[in-house]
Image (cartoon, rainbow, N blue to C red; front, side):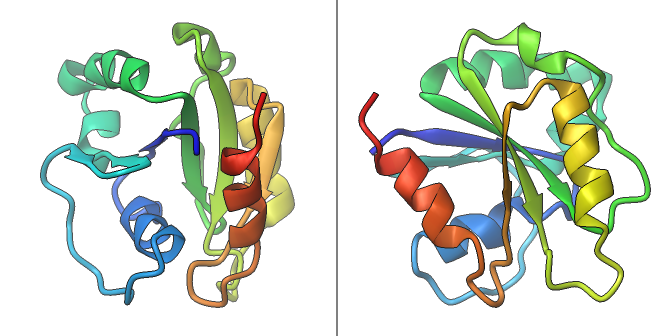
Length: 143
């Protein structure tokens, strides 16, 4: 299975997605440091939001086979710049988290992820499980 690093702002759904992909009970906690797990690297949202630490994420990406840019389905704006995927020489996928939220706008958030450079977009809900099998199948697929 490919190793994926999840990158996104605070409360984007990275840790919840990590728990769901691992089949764990979902409980909220704030990720304070980079968590290296078996096939997932979960990063703190603060790293993405602060200029002083955001560059470190490009370096951490080299520890993974795939970079997952995570945006919540109800984001009011995208934190990812256009064509930001060019910063790493890994495949970058987009993940729209929380598609079950009542104010979700999956189409808008997917458009932002495509603008950032993501060619594959995975809409998911860690709560309902929708879309999780698609990400798992993608990560298990041999190149």
